[in-house]
Every structure is written in structure tokens, then in C-alpha cells.
Length: 174
Image (cartoon, rainbow, N blue to C red):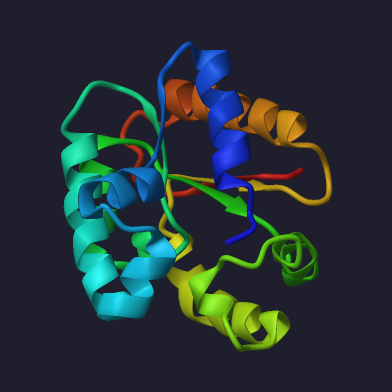
């Protein structure tokens, strides 16, 4: 949350001439509810179940750039299908920058009624080990989404040229 998955993803898709798909929007369309409403009515577990199904369906479709929610890659089944069907990219951002970014929006279910810094520090501790399994890690910071997109495109090109097996994550500095 706050890493720039959607804004960077849209730019990457445009540079690669591919469609962009936002998994959260597809989940909302499938459920006919907002992500916030799904969390409130059915809880996080139900949301994650639907998220897993939607991502699997999307990855079985035509090639595209897919932006997933921050918790999607934590699920082992989701990680497995992403590894099988695509290339995973972690936009790695430090906690300070994440806090700055998430303070701009109020519709993040995991931040409702909680200190964003405390929640983000907990999520970093919980999620970064799974994120570390991504095929590619691109460190982004307070730079522009355009700069991050260029980094991602370059990292993907190098990954495809140097690591077609996609066996180990690669990290590229900002």
C-alpha cells in the first residue's frame, strides 16, 4: 500500500504497449462492492479468497500488466500462480515514504482507526519476506512514477535477457 503499484503499473503498460489491469478494480467489479465494503461486510479473509480467484482468472488471460493489492502476494497460492504465469515485481519503498504517501488517502481498509506508521511497520515485517520472493525487486523512493516505470521496464528487459528461468529475485537500485 502506497508503493505506487497502480501509477507505476499504468506507465509500464503504456511503455510496453500492453493493457493495464488493476486487480482491486476487477475484484470490485466481480463483487459489485468496493474493497472497503468487502472488508467491512465480509472481512479480510473473504476478500483474500476473492482476490486469489480474480488474480488467477486474470493471469489466465492475454498478456497484460497487472497491479495487485499489497496483500495479494502474501498468499502462497497467489504467489505460485504469479510465478507460473507471469513476472512478479516488488516496488520496494521505505516505511517513511510509505507513510507520507498513504497519508494522502483515507479509503485504505487496513489503516482505518489505526496509526498508519504502526500498521505499515507491522505490514513491512509481515510482508517483506514474501515480497522478497518476487522475480524482480526495484527500489523506488521519492522519485516520480515515470522514473520508477523506466526502472521497471529496464529491469524486466534485463530479467528476460539474463534470467529466463526467473529462479532468483534480482534487485536494482533506484
